[in-house]
Amino acid sequence: MRTYRLTLCALFVAIGTLCANLIYIPAGVSKCFPVQHAINVLSAVILGPGPAVAIAFVISCLRNALGTGSLLAFPGSMIGALCAGLLYKHWRKLPAAMLGEVFGTGILGGSVAWVVARFVLGSKAAAWFFIPPFLVSTMGGSIIAGLLLKSGALDFVLSRTRNKQEWEH
Image (cartoon, rainbow, N blue to C red):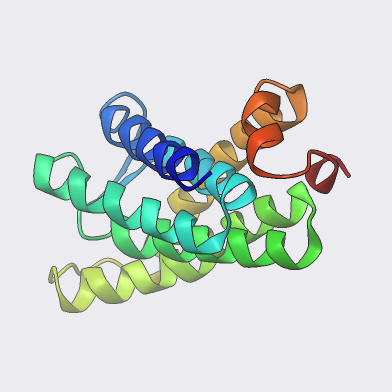
């Protein structure tokens, strides 16, 4: 089972890294990435909060190393993954994971991104500058993940990692 879970982590990292240039929303010094948010929700539901944060961190590292991301990838993706994972762990409901991702990335991650942009990157952007694009990106990604999970497309993965009834409600 550990090998299976580790393989899923690697698969999520590969998808997140390879899709980095396909779909993103440019927002000043930031690139909002809906695929990352879908991966955050999927990994939070399937694997839990710890692996979800680790996956978000590795994808952010790889995107930065490959030049397809910015330092702002870290706060948005990791905070969103943590909130999605914690809310799902507590309530065992897919909408809780989606809400955690949207609030964690859109509000908390957008606020932390402003701090990083301001004091690390030297950006003069206003605090509210990052929140709207982060919200749009994370809402889109969360909806994609929700549709994938509700459609049954990932039932084979869920049947090997968690009880499907945990996320159906």
